[in-house]
Length: 91
Image (tube, rainbow, N blue to C red; front, top):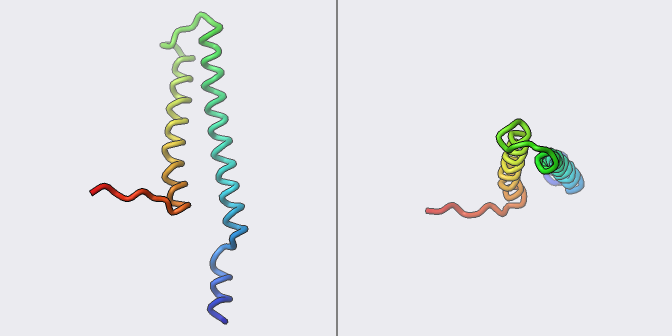
């Protein structure tokens, strides 16, 4: 009985883990939304203005898209690890 009590004291509850996951997903969505909004604003400026892709606006667009890609690339392995769906390594 003591071991069961100690286990409950050390390991986070299902509700705590759920809240932590919910918080992480919320932050991820906020970061994605911010980067996507920045990229869309830069694209809109390129469309309406007489601006080329080689200027600062094009750089903002490229930077936002690259950061969005990196964020997704970072998040996928974390999600797989968290859900124990890690793909097997190739030999």
